[in-house]
Image 1 (tube, rainbow, N blue to C red):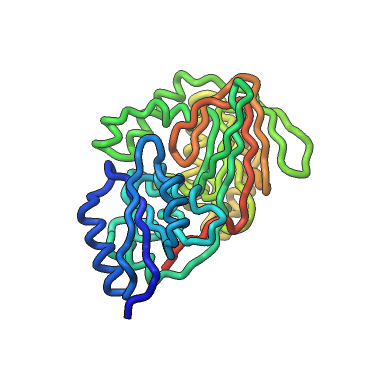
Image 2 (tube, rainbow, N blue to C red):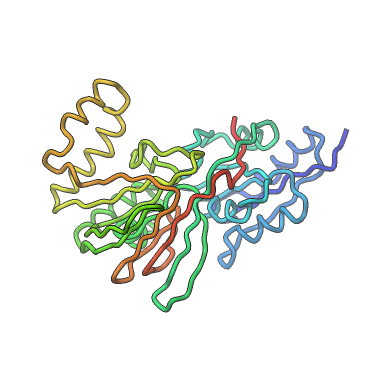
Length: 323
């Protein structure tokens, strides 16, 4: 029995095999008794937000996003607050939201099945109000992490050809180059309900999720549905400081935090040498102001430079399909 429901697919033609993906979704829709799906191709001018909004207006019961992290971010922005669920078909280099939600990364059929059979769950979506050097303001959403400083510079400096050949490891090469050339900068930041603080940093990251490529747990306590943003302020001093940062996000956060003994070891060594290389904070909202415009990234995409960004957590602002 056919119903009036239909699925919509927003896809990046550069990242996916469009013919294969469209055929698979048509077959699955028919098996579920749904109407034929509708398809929306992204473009350089609109990487997915407008297409997702059109899919909602067209009455889609679920919107599938197929592409890299940038496509997922844009589609999520278009679906923000609509109540129409997002289903992920991981197709990029990082697939960070899918990794944090523990979704299938390499099984396209299983990913499509979730659009029809998965449980719908509300998660948070981050919102960044960006102020440019000329005073212009822009609002953009993010689902994983935003950053100012060396992380944004790293993304800007990544060699696209190397990224195609080795994937996310290209960011490591770019990161090493950025660490050598980047200078710390002063930020003025304020958590909601608290006074403003000042710090000299190499980077400040604001996360809705805490896990990056390679299983690096930058914000181990981050939850996608707690209504809070987790913040990591990086203040390494020299090359040794960066080694301490690496130790913390790999050994401490990935290994020691998983056991009671390990957590006691971390607590015992807190405040020692290099203990302040990363400061972790949490808040529903955060404003970061810089004295000189800094590079900005949202979910791994370059977003130019900014002099101030007001970050906010839109609690339950995005519906997603999960196993």
